Image (cartoon, rainbow, N blue to C red; front, side, top):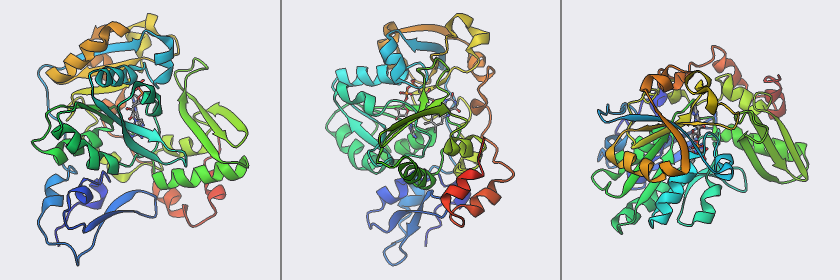
Amino acid sequence: MYRMAERELCTGCGACAAVCKERAITMKMDREGFRYPKINAALCIQCGQCGAVCVRRDGGKDSLSRTCWGARAKEPETRLLGSSGGIFPLLADQVIQEGGVVFGAVLQKNGDVTHMGVDMRKDIPLMTRTKYVQSELSQVWREIGPLLQEGRKVLFCGTPCQAAALRAYLGENLRGLILVDLVCYGVPSPGIWRHYVRFLEKRYKGPFRSFAFRDKRGGDNGHTAVAEVGEKTVAYSLYQDRFCRSYFQNINIRPSCFHCRYCTTQRASDITLGDFWGIEHVKPEFDDGMGNSAVICHTAQGQRLWEAVQDKTQWFSCDERDIVNSSQPRLREPTEPSSRRGWYMGLYGRIPFRMWLRLFKA
Ligand SMILES: Cc1cc2nc3c(=O)[nH]c(=O)nc-3n(C[C@H](O)[C@H](O)[C@H](O)COP(=O)(O)OP(=O)(O)OC[C@H]3O[C@@H](n4cnc5c(N)ncnc54)[C@H](O)[C@@H]3O)c2cc1C
């Protein structure tokens, strides 16, 4: 049997399952709630396709033409739509106006986070804003290749490992594809998130309606979480929310994130977007609490798309060091696991979930 990925490095993208013509690979959640490939040895013909498409050991490429910007959408509504400066919604709008399709992470009605494609401007808000949950990509594998073959333009936005996986999966057939990736702290467990959604439903006695991980309406750069469950709308600090606490304490993060090869400006994408943390040291007049984006263009294609929306933003050009050195550790090194991660994750699933959550009290 082909030995596909050392488990610690598997990003759980699912490209191996998608590429397998024998349908020998399925993605299954492990006991920490992360998806990993499971091979049915009876169906596997050892063709090696899964290994060839796997990006576990890949990293990004250096770019000589990289340009760096600080920016935010001029229109306050668009800026509010995004978690940072609202640059993603502008890029998405541009691509859709050019007849393209945009794929991004959508919080589904049941709380799951999955990537979906939209080609209508009115649907862009479905995929804006950061969700601190690893998203599922099966629709991406099914739909993007055929769209590119039809000659449609496609914008994909996701974590850097997802963008790299999509590039590897499509191989030569990249014409028309624009890859936007994010600065990324690491992805939390979708299984634990599912558990948390059910917990909120019990607690607030009604169905899950939505959850904003980065609500900016309080002018705090999106450090407020807002849950809408049943009749209730509850807002609290991002760092008080128990699920988010287990994230920012470096517990519920996927093991591969601690070895991430994309915590650098060398990427496999056309554009990288992130929060412009530390903007107060670089451009203090931009620091109004409503979020700013760091925009890094790696390729000529990325630069063209950025220039097409630049007029709709307030922007300044900057040095790479302004972004990397400000307060942006995730462009220098991966998140470190908590020394107690094993202990916490060992208890997950073994004690009642509400008790497990209590371990993360403020
Ligand atoms: C898990 C995660 C961790 C992050 N960590 C950092 C960090 O440490 N430092 C930093 O500067 N920025 C981080 N970001 C990026 C930041 O939060 C913003 O997403 C980014 O700056 C774009 O903001 P925007 O205002 O332009 O658009 P937004 O509308 O906020 O961007 C939304 C885009 O992000 C994508 N997205 C949202 N959730 C997910 C998800 N779960 N998986 C894949 N794609 C998703 C959507 O597809 C959409 O395209 C992180 C994002 C995520 C999802």
